[in-house]
Image (cartoon, rainbow, N blue to C red; front, side):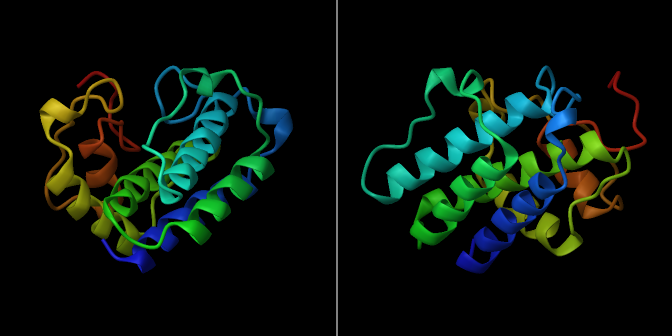
Amino acid sequence: MSRASFTAAGHYLQEQMALLSTANLHRQSGCANWDEQHLINHVAQVANAVCETAGGAPFAVPKQAETIASTPKEAASSVEHALDLLESGPMLNMASIEFTAHGWDLGIGMDPQHRIPEELAEKVLELARGMLTDELRGSHFAPRRQVPESTNASDRLVAFLGRVPPGQANNQ
């Protein structure tokens, strides 16, 4: 994945965080069992871990990521710092998937018909298909969901990441 695509993923996530109201952070996000506050906390921790990795430390998201209180503005600042620091390497790919997935998770919490920008979704879907095997999903991604290949790129990506695309039943 290119540096430009990583930057696009980070900006997409930041745009979604900018739309959040701190009064509504209790809303369910697109990430199962996480409200928007939990997701914002996780995003801040992932971005901080990306920054540490860019500085030479091994990548690790602390277990307490869900308990650290972060505002959308603080999390967006952490993402901006990651965008400034990470220039190249495999972390670009992982962070691009994370940032795009969590941007959608926040977007869908605000708008049930939210879609990832098509060009970004296409690039991240191609990347995810190359990186995310069934064995590597672990607790981070649910099993992929089936959607027709003719479905828009946003829905194909979120289904590949184990999330429920808009308009689909949650019982697949």
